[in-house]
Each structure stands twice: as C-alpha cells, then as structure tokens.
Length: 264
Image (cartoon, rainbow, N blue to C red; front, side):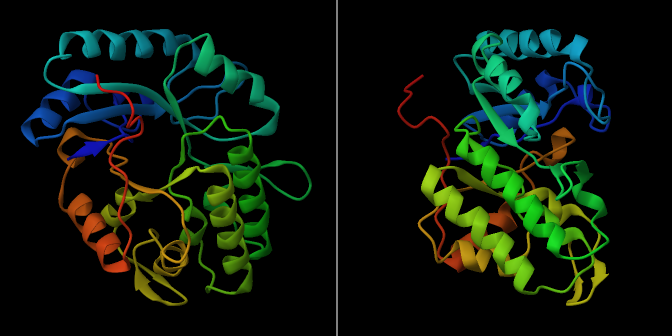
C-alpha cells in the first residue's frame, strides 16, 4: 500500500501546488492514503515560511472539501506540521479539538536551548551539546501525547559536526522516548532530494543520517516514510523508493497507515 502523510502545499510560501494538485498526483501514482500536513501557523507570532494564522481556516476547509469530493477514490487526512514549543501546548490541543485537525507532525525546526530561548535547528554552530537540548525538546513534545509522529527526528545532523557522543545521546533520548510513548519516527525522503554537501564524515545528504537510523533499527519503535514533498511531482519519486529500500536493508518495516483501525 502506498501512502504519504507529510505533504505541503503552496500556502506555506515555499512549496507549489494546490491540495487538488497533490490529490491528482496521488491518484496517478497509485496512493491509497494521502495526509496533508502543511506548516502550521502560530496565533501570536509569524515564524515565517508558513501560512498566516488568518489562513488556517481556509486550509482546513480546503482539505475537508477535497476529502468529500474524492471520498470514493482516496483516503485523505487533515494534518499539520508544527514545532513543539512548551508555551503553545494549549494551542496544540485546540488544533486537535476545536479545529478538528486529525494529526500533528512534530517538525522541530526550532527548539528550546539551555537558556530557555527559541533556537533554530538549522543554525547549531556552537557545539554538539546543543543537540541534547534539541532532543530534550523533542522528547518533551512526545510525552505530551499530542503528536502522532516526529518528522525528520535526525534533522540536527544537517549541522556540520562529526558524529560523536552528544549525537548518540540525542538519538538515544529521541528513540527511547518514541518507544515509551509509542510515537512514530519519520524517515524523511526530502533530505535525499538535497544536493550532497561536505561534512566531517564525508560528502553526503544532510539527512536521513545513517548512524541515527542504525540505532532506530535496534529498538522496537514504529517508523514511517514521509515524502515531505513541496511539489506534486515529489509526492512519490525516487527518493521515496530509496527510503523504503534503505529501511528494508536495515530490517525496518515501516507503517503505512496512521489510523489502521479506521476502515473509511
């Protein structure tokens, strides 16, 4: 069964294609389930590269409309990708209850640093000790029970440090908490679409990071593949096929449904 639950649309301002464009591509590629998870806004601050809070209702209404229109052809899920920041816990609960969002993906582009400040995951330049702070924020988010999965949990490895004990400790914390909370970890295909770069351990894509996923393979944690597509043609491409092959080589059988008990 082909499925994808990490899908962005043009509303996030760094993707292209409407909700219906992705649905048509999903049908063309033979998907049976498609989840929309565009970058969620915050009610009181614009963190950029996402829809505005005033646009949230239109996005959710558009996904709901598409779900009804294509009900007989495709299972469509209504989700959002958002960072876990502790002060917004009530907001996450509102998204799932008041706004009827079916699932949240934790995409930790920001985390809480040791000084209690919001820090950018893409700009960790001081030391790998920051990876521990990143992992602690991810773990805290998982323990809330509000997130169905963690998108690109190994995102911290896009920074230019060598894999060391801090990297392993961060991975251990994320993986152990995923097991304890039964939270899915996402093997993110979008990292494979990035151009290779020079890192201390050689030339590679920024993520998924092999060392992290070898550790995942040793734990009883659920894993899914997410396209993290920002254009319809990337919904199911060679990066997705490669992701499934890699997980198979690691002995990991990914889940293909977020709601397996639902027979819609």
